[in-house]
Picture 1: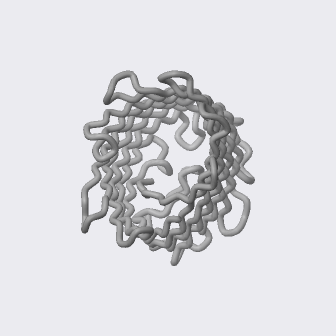
Picture 2: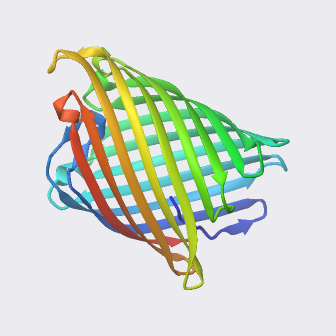
Picture 3: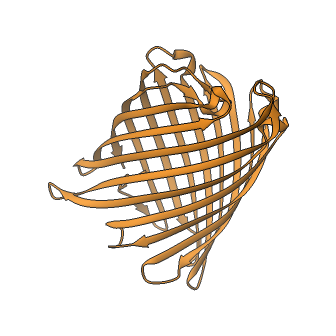
Length: 289
């Protein structure tokens, strides 16, 4: 998210938030968690709101608590209307040039008003500048997920994440290169997999009408190798996933922003239901406080 939030300061506590309304066109409405795609496009209305509270416990220890809510409502595929609640917490400890962190978040998602996905994740991390322009962050992540009425897909996963940031011109222009390894152990062997993912993001801020606008381009590539045989193809499944994204956030007023975004996904798989293309184009108006 590229939002530039204004903040109210209450002593050592900072409170910020965002409310947004938008719409997007999805060329292939799908439910990625269960490998289902419609091969049809639709327009969705999107409402989201979040609240964040940051508190400095001491000079070297800080904490953050956040709540995010998103509602996606389709024009035709109303049975795939999705409501998602995300609750997050973070604790950071600065020690010299490095910061040690602990992140937790919980996700509860509903499809068509019915329980669908529950996901919990905890991730200790360490980060810091190794040179003037280079910032590194590494973390270990453990997560558990459950999908309603699909017990075979319930899973535990753990993995390693590495991110390197190169600041060309501070926060006005920087690059982010990342790598993620994930091992997901599902109840059913055919959903158990190992994955390797690399990503590259570039962020550029420019002045528009005297205010800072932000542009971002990104690419992600992931390969998954599944453990068990998939009954429908009678062999081990593999996936190769390419995702391209781009967005621009334009300030309209001091606390009001217009964001235009797009994306393209190429999911290549030997499992037919997981082999598809998808394009997304959308925009939203955001009010930050």
